[in-house]
Amino acid sequence: MNKLSTILILLVLSCVSAFSQQLPLFSNYIFDPYLYNPAYIANSGFTEINFIHRRQWVDIQDAPVISGINAQIPLNGKLAIGVNAINDESVLLDRISGGVTVGYKVPLSSHHKIAFGLSMGVIYNSLDLDGVETVTDPALSSAADRSTSLDGQFGIMYNWKNLSLGFSLPRLFVSDPNSEESFSEIEFAELRNQIFIASYKVELSPLINLQPVVQYRFTQDEQDFFEAAALIGYKDLVKVGGFYRQDSGPGFLFQLTANDLVSISYGHEFATNQDLSFAGTTHEFQLKLRLGKKKPPLVVKDRTNNVNDPIAQTTPDQEEENQPVLDSIRVEETTLSNKKSLEEAGLQPEEPSEVSPPKDRTEKNISEKDIALENIVKDVEVNKEPVEVQEMTSGYYLVVGSFHTEEYAQSLYKEVIKLHPNSEIGYDESTDFYFVYIEKVSETEGSLEAIQSIRETTSFKDAWFKKIE
Image 1 (spheres, rainbow, N blue to C red):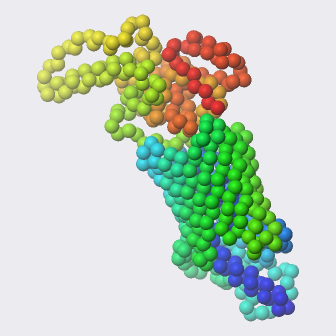
Image 2 (image 1 turned 135 degrees about the horizontal axis):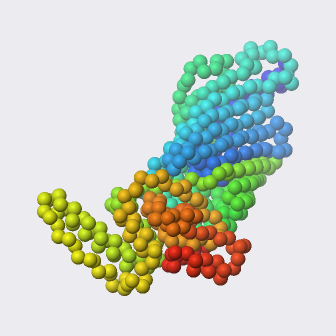
Image 3 (image 1 turned 45 degrees about the vertical axis):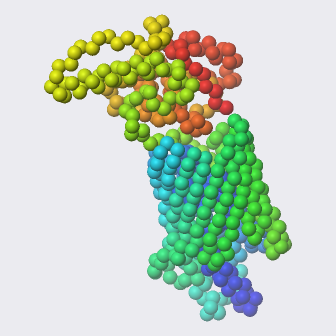
């Protein structure tokens, strides 16, 4: 073997050994934070399959090429599982890593949640010396052997409304591609590799949103760096943005989404830094496939109200409209509560006189919706299997009730379904509300005037139409 080949391989091994405690570098992590933090697994609520391919420094032969795939599956509002695999090729070294992830979300309130994620897997390193003369140098004899080591990541994510904060440890175990042993000694890393990320989504208008993202990475070799990015989105269909990575340079990002099911993303890095400009640009592509229906987010029950209380969590627009009915329900609940207290004290309660309806609540304006709401208070069948919540897509919805908590929507649904068997419960992520609706009509199926006529044929004359863009 000539000296040049020996020096080249030794340089590769030393660089890989230093880099082995870090994750591969990506730009599209903004569209899939799970790449860096397992706590973000299935954060969209959909079952997802993501493909990613990165070609770095296109003007350099044998420059790093990274390809990966991951699947993220939400089992319910709390638990999610996933699998991932990444192939990282650089010069003579080929590194394949793969593992499984378990994520768990803990709701703190209706707008706060914290999530944890843990990934465990293996890293397989192989050095391709087929193109090099016979290895005789003792310094390279061990390097020619393949090695396998344990891999692991841990992450935490905190979410408050549109604010997201993440912290991850991308390498939990020491991984040395130069070692001749495989799993001989499992050694925890010094945890010097850390990644912090923060993002916030601002709704500039009903159609336009802005999402700034900041990331800071601590590395074992003390080559720390930060990244800052911003994305502008149109109805979450098209997103365009740019970013800057310290000691590397700027780049831009683009994502196109069709029907919330398929997304194609592209990242381009200019590498204008003086030390990297000779290497050419970097290209990165990502394909996201979403399967099935979106799992509704986990909602914390309101401990101060009865789970079947239809008064709780109505929209402001409906409070005034429903006030007569709600006042009547409160009177009925108070009467029943007082009667129970007297019975527990051993006293015979007097038969209550008929309760007069509240002011402005006459026989004329009592609708079947009012009756359905009153029946919720009397309903003892609270253990029925809940209906599956549907994600609300674009169209017009004839709504009879809206709630901030799923349990209340399920209670009203049990009554509405008796009169309208095709009723559904929908969730609108933009408002964080659950809607009980009788019918849905798309904009292409008729004019708004024609859609409004449906209202006249239903049992709920005070239902209203909600439009989802």
